[in-house]
Image 1: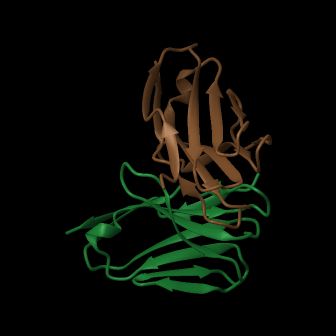
Image 2: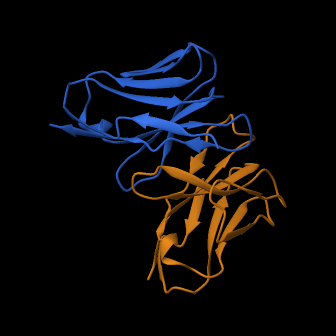
Length: 113
Length: 110
């Protein structure tokens, strides 16, 4: 039972490049979340999904897009990477609703040069 | 939007000393969850508080939810080096998502 798996673990991009971060969970969770973590700022919600085929904006959605085509996968896309998007990205999932614990992946460390 | 604050930002303690971190909001909190993140790791769920005035204990950790549901606290008795990490509170914002506080980083000197 892997839990929440994020790929890749590390990535360096040049400004303007695009990439997709993959989050996969094997716990049959309905809710999935993408956060970014910057020093001293805690976790900020980028986008989230309450079920297959649904997505919603969080606190800091600009510059990111997401898709939830399959229940177990939640993809985060950067269309044109900017240095301000240098961060550690965490994916999380919960069974149903925001009143249940979130299970986090190990994170993706992304640097934009 | 809603803001969740935590104090202190950093805390250095000697092993065996107690530690407390506080989570505050200007608006009424919905449900509070507490997470711990070890250096280089990912957040791990500790506990959830739902009711006004609720107190829960996990071994040396005591969690409280304020009577007015505008604050919460985490107290660690007799810290150990294994307690090192950043402690986050998160409110579920009466909805489907979470608002995290900035965290309190705890260092424990042996």
